[in-house]
Length: 402
Image (cartoon, rainbow, N blue to C red; front, top):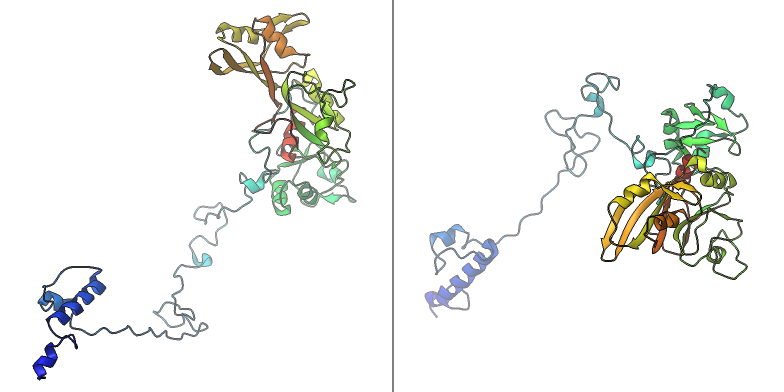
């Protein structure tokens, strides 16, 4: 076979078909399916895309070794680490203008925000707890004790006691470092006196400590619980008639051995929140009328509900044992034949809500207590019992002046 025949044979791929196959491979590799160039593949556009150039794999890049100890010593060159990467060209903090000025002065650097600053979750008392995050500001009763004279902090110091920040951290307020910041910021009170000294020692058994107005309960023997009472359960620990009572729901709770008692009562047909505790002082204050602890109820009555009845309930209704009224009245929902109303009142008289609605001509079809003071049911399952969080306990104690 002649030289020309060998050049045009399909075996060596240099003929017309070979050029088309090689050019199509080049185009699919370089252009991702780009269809430019002549049909024969030998035009200028085909040549411009490197159709007749042999493929060469790129050489691996050789990295120049740089001694990390000598990096950045040569003037005019950026510093490099051992891998050849350029270091940051930012000025160190000490060289920035205003770095040497005292904080707060004109031109001084602004400090970076850090965890634990006032307002952050870590700096709130019991900020890591699940319950009690949205209870709002601490509410104290209207009746206040007489003013306490200024007592030197040295008199509050107990040489045989425990450091204040350690007591706070052990009670779950926050970490010890954050507790020290709270003390220095004047957010901690011991026996009614603001404390700012970090070295103070207190007796955990006798000291009364408040953080941001929240009482820290240091007695681990005291129990505070919320029971979502179902309909048909008697508000007592034992019932001689054998009806379902509170103790039946406490059997599965870990605090079964504690002697608990309920704060107030709910009649058999009423559902909702019932507080359980062994703190006698708290229970007495929650039920005493002078502290006026508000209680929130959801009331279902038959509809439609006239417009002026709510104003009548707020102004007062005469009952057999005197006048009574609700603190607030709000229409929650209205469906054909039924109306759902939210009322708040602080009276602790027996069956007061049912008697009020009976007096205005709308007997209660269903009654649920959803809140006592700052403590609410939320999404707690009916018939369940849960322990209050320490933040909730602090709000509850503060609501009655403890």
